[in-house]
Amino acid sequence: MNEQSRTIAIVSYVTIIGWIIALIMRQSEKPQSELSRFHLRQALGINLIGFALSIVHYVLTFVYLGFIGNILGFVLFILWLIGLIGAIQGQFRYVPFLGRWFEENFDFVR
Image (cartoon, rainbow, N blue to C red; front, side, top):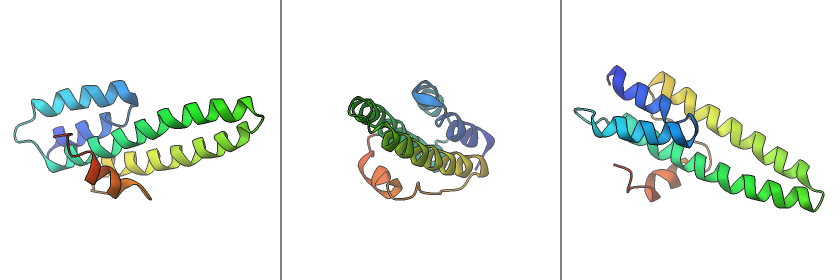
């Protein structure tokens, strides 16, 4: 594992813009590491779940159940933090509950 692959893994967790930047950085990485690919997939899953949760939170707020959206947002933050810490440490650490699904279904991220 080199420093560039760890940097790509970390940047991928910093919003969807960071994910796009990390994906572009990975294209120029020689040789392409499995660590950066792994964390790109995990971070993409977290970003997509976050987007979906923002819509759910809006709807729940509309029907006076916004606190449920807040709880789900906090859970998503914890999942994001676990993924980010794994990237910082240079480890292949799946996001709990959904990480293996992200790895299997986001195989288009190369």
